[in-house]
Image (cartoon, rainbow, N blue to C red; front, side):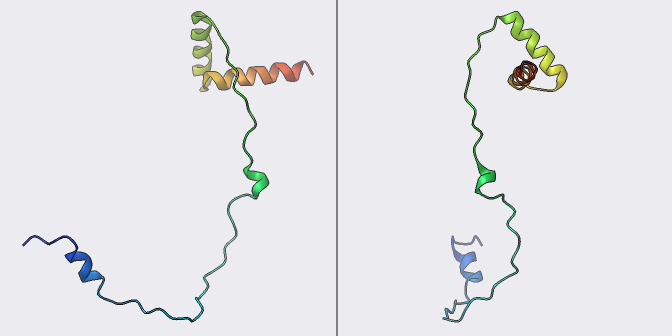
Length: 87
């Protein structure tokens, strides 16, 4: 025989809940795993649009793929290295 919707739930929810004013038992206190608010700050980056011709993009993609990086990541690394060298 097919069960009627809710019949199964009624079988498992027969026990009535008794509410009291007694204090709750506290569990074990664990260390907070998240960093504090200063460690949750957002990255302060801005978007820069760069226009490149197709052959340059193809070569950039090939170099990035060979290094296991995305093109944007590779360009960002190159820019930072270049700026650090000119400091």
